[in-house]
Length: 271
Image: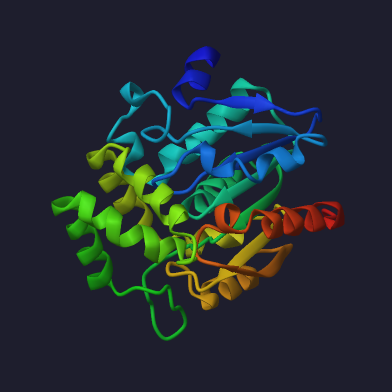
């Protein structure tokens, strides 16, 4: 079972430390998007990288449309990896949708995780006035996914620069667009629906693991209100506002990303 799980998710392990630090990539990406950040922690931690099934170099034959119709399937994969490697005291670093995947995994198996780090996280992308502004109306999401279904290449070309920002560095948006278009169309459409239509606000109160919420500025997918909402809902959370712009600060501003995580980790005390 263990070799199958590690192959399924293309798990890579390196580092000189003993405490595991797991990095989980966002929608349409893969573990390569952590290449500027993860190595900064290898002297102190055991780094665990992986690809969600359907992304990167994962085993796409393992993709099951029923299992991955919701984020619970991806959360189970995270748990499977941790158990296969016998990991405990895990620092989980999730980008975007993987933040919620990490939350679901920590609710199901709280003993595995010691702290959670979220970058550009949102428990719900849909507006629910007057108390919650997720950033999108239902029609906005419907239109985005309809475009994705009908013109995937055009969708990728439109969305990548919007998500990345940093127009002065077009190579970043190009890398994201290339990542989008190299991934199976049908799988990404299902992953997008599972991501953008989900609502995990009711699950936040179940989290007791200390967490760091890192929120970049000018994030097209996560309004500042959402980061503040998360902070208020998550017990033992720390909110850090980033100077980095766009939804991918670990790619566009890795130094700031590294510094914020390093500044947070020694300061955490579980009570």
